[in-house]
Image (spheres, rainbow, N blue to C red):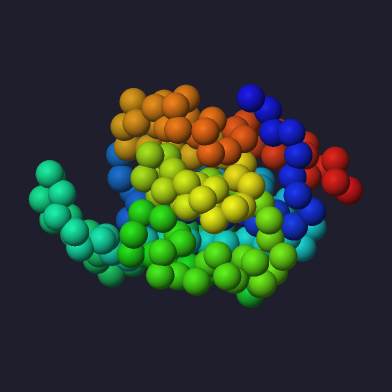
Length: 186
């Protein structure tokens, strides 16, 4: 479904485009996800809209059926990829959960900037992107998901999130849909 509108103060939230994550085997070419995210970054920055760059440096400590997970965070693993071109005005968030919201103060920082909507991209569709989108929706933000600017290690999980979860919490579309909506605001 195409993106219908973007609020005047919409933030772009980029999830886990960092050295250790982009190096993992992924369902779609990471270069395509990075290129589309760069297009979005340029459009948001040109309009002075907030950009949030998120990296992951840990996992929740709770037990699961798969056991207690830890990340093998080696030197450089958490570094944002240079293609993002980090700018002084960008909000930088380091998370230790799947979502960018718990324990980071992100919701308050966005509200302080007058943000009412978020566009979420990145890796992984069924993990960080979905969790962040769910939290944003539950906290009252409008959510838009350009599904061609995200990927997952497993194509089935990506497809399930896109077809079953996202329509319940967000508007979905393509990077072009988001760029067209931004151009319509000018």
